[in-house]
Image 1 (cartoon, rainbow, N blue to C red):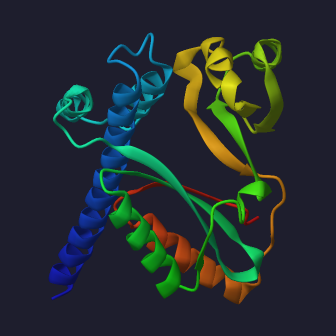
Image 2: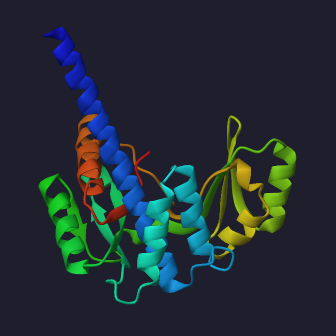
Length: 233
């Protein structure tokens, strides 16, 4: 029986890992499709596509999945993927910016509203919490030469630099993300994307934190949700 229980545990963890990987691949595929729909299929001239392709490479996304997303994005007969942003509030003054990529905005809106309402959150109109965030470029890199990396980033237009051990986080204005990214050795880049960065954070009580974590997880599980940004410390 103990052997059976051990196998069941391994199987459950594998299924959870597979589901998480599938969700990541789905999000990257949508990012690729949106980038192609808004530009072209050349990552050298389409910076949004280059970011998505870099994410695919770092996530070890299968080549077939990438090519399928490129093909769907460039196929005018395919349903267009739209990017939409919703706003939500949670316990203790917590706020969320919820990014979706979807071929059905009515479905995405309904699913996000339902996830918020059923898990202690509240859907709020556009502008209700977005003023608490800045839309900025966010790059994390692990450079070999720390001083040179800082200097290059600053000269290219970085707004802020934060070290965490050997990892450097570079904040830029949204329009400067790609210019700064080009100055960095791509092999050292861990991540690069546009994010909603909170201008102030809130600290939640233990009970509110538990509610918020469950709320965040429920919203994240919505198929059309590709990213969530919050103001929780």
